[in-house]
Image 1: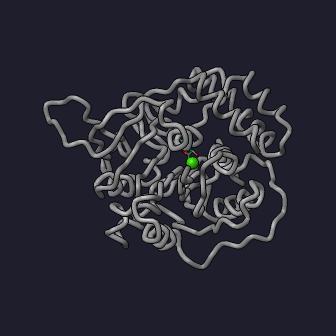
Image 2: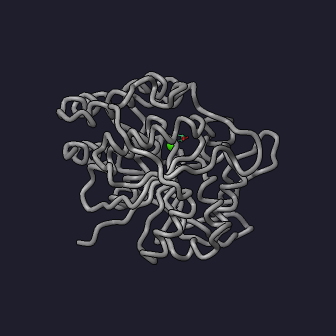
Image 3: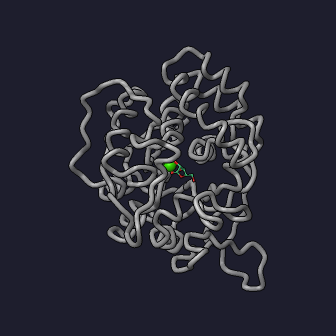
Length: 311
Ligand code: RIB
Ligand code: CA
């Protein structure tokens, strides 16, 4: 069976780290490149974290590219209160000697899409700044990509950074709006589905006991978020926002989605960064994405454990 070709844009970030560890362990996947974007923590941290993760997950040969150091417009925000100043909640990764490539994230993504027309899935796990720049600089890119699967937005649930907005969208609303407008095949994994995509305390314990350093690291950094998930989301477990978007790429059958139109509020006072979804309004807006809104949670948990058991 041909491998799934994946290019991952991320802002590690502990759940980005978990998603990358899972992508490296997953069967049938070839990671063409990793790119870092400013998000959870500044690029000065997300880039070194991405390099350290590439080494830790045993994919030293996968090139790592630097992307944008801030949004294409508006103020920069971070989530250091969740991920810590270093972005990995103080959980240092082993030393390595990897260096980022000279090529920018957006040029590397375009080169890979040209080399594999219609075959590359772009997995976007952070603010969409790099993706928007890539689409603006390379107008053919949206059609060349197989699809863009992104973690971001909130359709029928409240935001997590503001009452209206989810972090990845609010971090760069103009970029997100540009991505939804670009004509690419977009699959959105918003909080509506990622809040349901969690590991129970028992599953976290099984993960920690699997034996590999990568599984232990995943269980540790995500296990520390359980109290925050319990208090903030009422979920007794570790919510896996970014791993959920990756799992959609690996096993889409675990999820339920629907075609719909999404627009991003870029100007609002209380609603800036809101992903406005038209599911059944009189406006009957032409769908521009697949909105994923449900997951088979037990099957998701089992799949995460089965994949990480290979690490
Ligand atoms: O809102 C959750 C998203 O924002 C995740 O991608 C997390 O890593 C942060 O980037
Ligand atoms: Ca992220």
